[in-house]
Length: 230
Length: 308
Image (cartoon, rainbow over all chains, first blue to last red; front, side):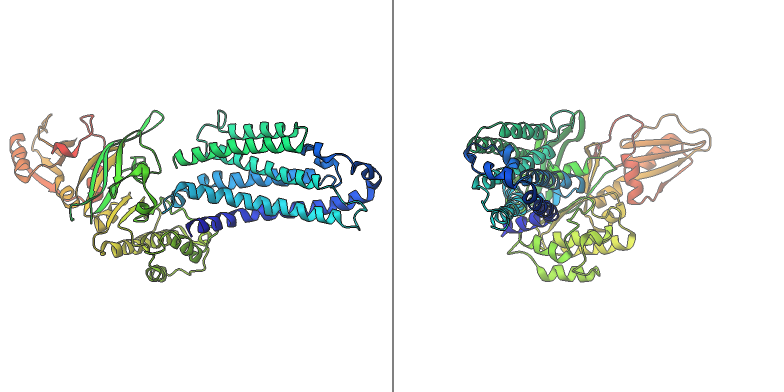
């Protein structure tokens, strides 16, 4: 009951950002699919047979969903950063930490509700919209050959990059160091992990990088949140 | 049971970098006590309260609320403690009814919905009003209703009447009195407004530059801090020697002394020994007493209550 109350509150606070990201991806993704159909049919005919097991996340944009990959990246990273700032920086400005922390629950529950809300927002606002675009691109009226599933998996991994940026922004928000010292270290690590992610040769390696980066940031955020002064 | 200590600090100290915010605070607040925690700006009130609630970690010392160490307050203990934050920071996007629903989830068994509704009605608020559309005073009222409705054993309020006008403050204090009337409830509230403290508190803790300067019954403080005017026919003496002297102001033929703990007989004796033509004790309200008591002393050191 306590967790649900916290989750509901966090989801409500994430809502404007999630809706904005979903609207952005839906609008520009649909436009991209439409224009892609006009210009790239010939090129697409041979690309679709490439081996998607060797596609890196960064290359998603080159495949049949066109520049949707780039849009997914922009939406996921933008949403991740916005949620990180909203949840962990904004409360400092509004001074609501005292109200939220002094209640009959553990700090771990409060943090878990925040992370779950961010995850749900990313999944719904970016992941599900991506699925919708993938489905649209798979319809016969879009192209005779449906896009490969690898592009969808890659897209979901880019949603994972959004989570990485969320954790990085949150960690930076929780840090009490000065901005020119280690405050932004969490975001720095996120950017580094992102570039590492794009340098991998296969989706599996990209996935591995994502899991390691998320794990490290999650651990650091957990520790920081439990010990931090508010 | 009457003497059960619900809030206790021992050598509680907090440094922010090199700045000493709270300096070895020792407090014992018994159950049923209404304690006014007063101090000037940046005296260390908010820091001390946050330390007590475990929102800050002490540099040294410890504090206990309801027998539980502040750095490890369990959800069960927090459930028994109400907290009104400084500035009444609530979620602006929530309406009053949403706030109630949110708060109630954390006090499923003890939430008194009827009391909350009565308080909201008493303050003349509409339940569907968004917090962001409320004035500072209205937010304070909602904040108080939220803190009181779970019927907490211990209520800690950080400057709850800050920025409120006189009428709203009076209403707010009436709300506080509601809980005071409930048996065995303990309140610690910090304030700048000494009139509020005088109205509701039975105990006063004065903090200055992070140091507890007085911790006693309000009445004791009221009778202990005195202003005495000694009038002389000729020139005033250069030195005055009496225990508990805080300040000594001179004019052409008058000495104004601020004394702590000096009895009337001692004052009469002083007047006689200094050759004063006459003397009188000035009636001071609590605010005057507080200002005089916390003003820097001419002796260059802080006066501590234990010295009287």
